[in-house]
Length: 246
Image 1 (cartoon, rainbow, N blue to C red):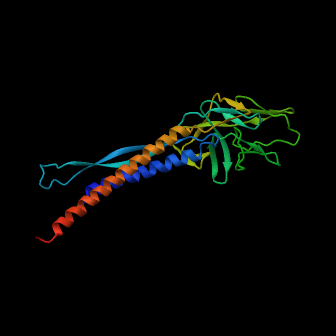
Image 2 (image 1 turned 120 degrees about the vertical axis):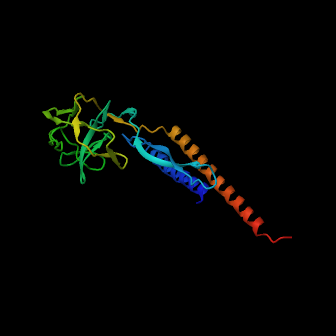
Image 3 (image 1 turned 45 degrees about the vertical axis):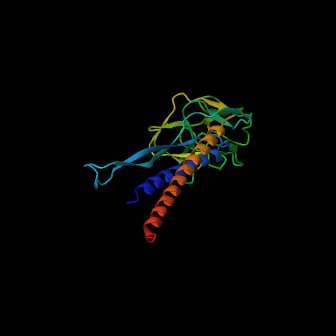
């Protein structure tokens, strides 16, 4: 069993995945409401066959990527003045209706369609507390959104924007940079805090991510060099063994 190369390969595979995650974060540094992805690594221990060593042999440690998770730190809020730009201060998610079902999002850059439907940037309708798309009439022009999600115009109340949280925040599956699928039921937030005319920025810190990328690349290069050095050592040993006796 080629223990050295197998251990190195596990490390290289983990570092490649870490690099992919950092690259994804950097690509979404300007995506509203984006939550940075993080990786969790662990050692996978295995007993080496004893051979000529004492009973029990040695323990080999392989690198294993156990999981990825989303950084829940809130992004900064940027004022835009657009009445349909909405940000959440504190916990909670907006809900939108996609072709694949209801999805959660904190990307609150909404627009008004010709039929009066309020949608996200992908055209998915924003839902109210009754899980129905919010829709305006042609006469509704001066829009006001209160902190609790109550939407009204100069003509009176229109509806209330739903703000929910999943019953288990660890059971969210990302779908792209803006949407999440809740694999558990959701519950309405008792006291949501919606800020009108504002969008939540990505919580990615580009300088920190670039630093992670450089560190990951250096680790990858170090392990690669170690594998190359081991290969040269073995080849040298083979050449010496195979050399004809003088």
